[in-house]
Each structure stands twice: as structure tokens, then as C-alpha cells.
Length: 120
Image (cartoon, rainbow, N blue to C red; front, top):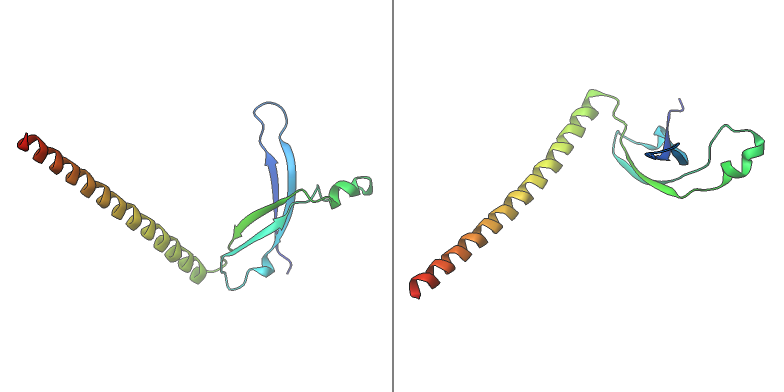
């Protein structure tokens, strides 16, 4: 089976039509063992146009960095949620430690201020 994801990139305009920037395809056969895959993919012109637009099809329009993970069974889904939870918990621990450090600094500053007021 040849499974692919087609990614179309557009610039969304408030007024007027959206601007097509390019498109690419991610072949799911490149994603092994339901692991996350990060890679750069070249953006190309519109695929499926006639030969008269071949120059636009062949012209590269930059690249896009995508993070893709194809989860197709329960074991992979559980693994994904555990990994996501671990990343979120680590992020929260960092925020907690930063807040503790900031609170300690504020308390120390207030203590020094009180000592200066009492000494004066």
C-alpha cells in the first residue's frame, strides 16, 4: 500500500483570495514503528495541472519542516500519550522550579527591605 499525506501550504489573507505557497507529500512508509519523524520537505507547485504549467510544478517554493507520527494501533496510541504526558510533566516541573526560585528571590528582597527599615 502506498499511503501518503498531502500537505498544502497557503497564506491566509483577510481580504481577497488565499495565496498558494506550495505543497508536498509525506510518504507514510518512511515512518517506522509508529515513531515520530521530523524532516524537511520541499514545497512544489500545484500537482495535477497540465503540461503547460510544468515550470510551476517543477519549481521549488522553499521547504517546510514537519513533525509526523502515524499511529495505527492501540499500543502506538498509548505510547504516544505516555510520551506526550512525560513532555508536559517535564515542562510543568521546569515552570514550578522557576516559580519557586522567583518566590524565594521576592521573599529575600522583602526580608532585606524590612531589615533596612528596622535599622533606620
